[in-house]
Image 1: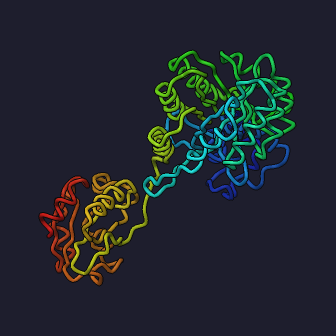
Image 2: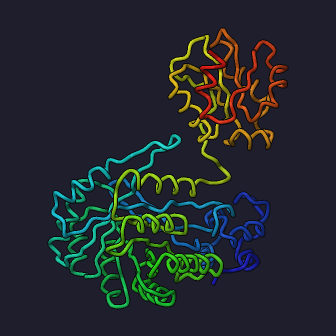
Length: 447
């Protein structure tokens, strides 16, 4: 059972040495009880106390890591129900599934474009995390052949899916993954699957149609020496899956119920169409999925899933930022205008893409607004005339242009007068409010 802050404090050295980064041992104990720091931050805790504190300091949702040829997919270690409470830490892995009733060459042809798929999103590279192989034939040889075919296309982590332990053994023998995920242990086969997971150092999916069933199985499997588990709460529809997923996360975080303190597995059952699978994947990403599987790959289906995942798992206190500075777009000349924006990635890419698409040359001054958008930064006092003028001088913008024209975003037109005082040698113009209107503004007003 989890210890309270006072109980943890009694086990600490109580020297108030501040080596942990907190002013007192009591402050550190309270943070440890709230799962906001690691026990390792205290370098002076004794061995006996460390052993007693291990249970309390362990994260409420166990971290599971799949490894293969330098690739890793991590899920777990989450400490909040909702992102705005703090942040989510480990994005769910997105996997594409193939089945062993397909010829090896067909499997390779299906997976090749999925393996090659990469897309740039506000300066981040988005891609699939791995592949799942399911045995639908029940033939160990065909399953092993399918696993080998996938391994010839991709070195990313694998999920192997079969409830037949002989078939699973053949699949594990055919993979070079350091730590695959195997699916699934249930009430009928859990002992044999646990033995396989322990033998091959694999993470194990535990499947049951009730919370009681899941908890009972995880305790039995843990007793056999398998620590790395993933939960598959079987639900008949999206509503049931959502309820079970939410209950599991609440029990793990709020009640510190260890038997359910594991990441979740989300995969469609056979026969579910592309629309349903897409909705299931979206729900899984948004609501606590750790490993999400889909049978379909096309760029138009996968891109929204990866973007959604990126947006949800971006720390709300640390927005995605670009480096402040002066960016050249379409080979600007000394006669080209200077456009101003903030260093929030989405804002920067929105402006840069519109200018680049117009074919018109411009200098883009990206000011340091601590990663906030234009209006948010202005409201927070992080984007004002003084800061803009400071960055104009810091980045030597005046040395790059002869025609000193600087264009403010339309949403902060109120800054124009103040900026004229800060930059008396510059012509200050007010641009459009939306990035999509920048090309027309440049052609009509700045031409």
